[in-house]
Amino acid sequence: MQSIFEYTAGLFDEIMIDDFWFTDCTCPQCDAARRLQTVNLSGRTFHVEGQTWEDYRRGLMWRLSQERILAPARKVNPNVKGDPQVSGVVRPLAGARATTWCRETADFDKIWVGTETRDRDQGGSVPYQAYFIMRWLGALGGKKVGGGWYDPLKTTPPTYLEQAAADGAGRGAREHVVLLWRSGTRERPGRRRGVARQHPGVAGYRRADAPAPGGWDRRL
Image (cartoon, rainbow, N blue to C red):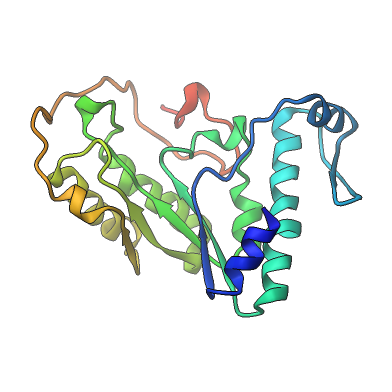
């Protein structure tokens, strides 16, 4: 992994890391380290607060970011900027798989917001989520928020473009990464809109690294 970031830093001044930057490993080696409250990287040992899987994984991902991405990449290219992308797809994994946004937002140069809402009849999320996550991460990252990212997977063109409006309204995204534009502009037969799922209560903010009950946001 380190060699990939070193190579990329030699070519570019900005590297965006996709949203699946997390771990759910439960191998014997990780389990032993968790019990000892340590993270071991390249012969160095770092202390971890607590013995839960969440504690261990957060410590591991934080140290990996520092030791295997940022420091080596900056050694190759002092001007390089590392940007993790956080999406509505992986946001619920903060507790279970320990994406640690508070620490990583502080360490990385920017963060990007992946709104990535879907059509409701395709198992998608509430359209409001795009606005919600942009506001939430905008409050966390402030000026470090580079912009919004969205794709056309499981969407019709109106839903795809709706994400752009939500990004702009949510925090006034300075830039937009539009993935697979051609795919998003094609009409897809058989896709319907307006099929709602029931979400009891009102969604509320939660602490950035807190586990989400049921996988999603707390509801009042």
